[in-house]
Length: 132
Image 1 (cartoon, rainbow, N blue to C red):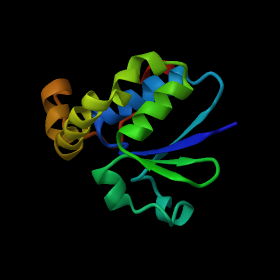
Image 2: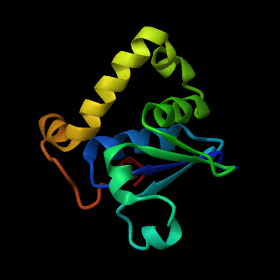
Image 3: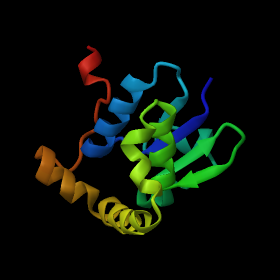
Image 4: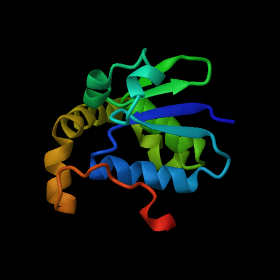
């Protein structure tokens, strides 16, 4: 049963790659993934502002609670059994540095994607490419 819904930018190559990785690891189906730019997104999730979700990653717990940014990252990786990969995000001093790094990444993710993947956006990225 889905515990956490992640609202992500499906047009960001790096974001879509991370979502694809999480999706492959999520054998217990603890996560749901929603592209904030998908058709009818506003109708399906009127409580999630896509412009705000574009600036900072949003997640929603099964009980309706909303979490943001690195909290979404931490909990999503923990739910797929990889808590040890992201445990450092909870260490007191590193948490502050990680928050700054996350804000930088979130703001410039399309430029960073262009440097890493060669494309700043995709229409939308297919997070299931390797499942074909």
